[in-house]
Length: 305
Image (tube, rainbow, N blue to C red; front, side):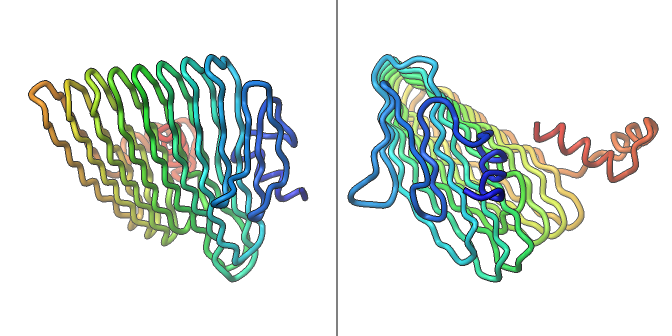
């Protein structure tokens, strides 16, 4: 890989060249490098582009890196990745996609990730999206995440869009069994004329299942964001959805919640707050020697941290 591709890897997956443990690096639609371990296997699909990540039952404290990088303008990349996490496993999966587009054609990555979290298994999934390049071509990313959590399973999902993505549609669907837990933390920054759509659809099917969805976003310039969240409480369960957004310049944000209690013991909550940065916050930081722009950046960084 060249210097640009290595820099993308560091930004989206904290990888300095090769990483310890299992990993699969996809570059410009092709396998660039792969390593498996005794407990984690990675196999190329035979029916669709993409991979199967198979984690043995009882695996503990292992990390899997599966980054995607694109440095060719005009490339439209599509992958289907399936994660089979065995019972009682405890693993961290670090994904992410970085695009370096210096041409005048659209570069696009669509990733469809399906998780099968086994009984009493625990998964932390981290995904970062980033775009750059001095060309006029757009950077597009459309991640779809389908989550199935078995009895007593736990999944924590951290997603962030750092910058440079012109258009994104982020879809997350989940079904939870008895005692299963899902926590999602989304951080999103848009600027220019960028558009971003977040779409959550969660089915709390199991007894004592729970979901907590938290989205924090900043819309600058003329960018637009829409946050859709649907939680179906189909059993004794608890669900919480929260959208907090800062708008700047001519930015626009819409939050559209939907919660459906289909069981008398379903407890569901939605919260949303959208507004500009408070003037007194900026003034306070400026009294400490920051410029107005520096003060705004400090507030935004703290909000998205």
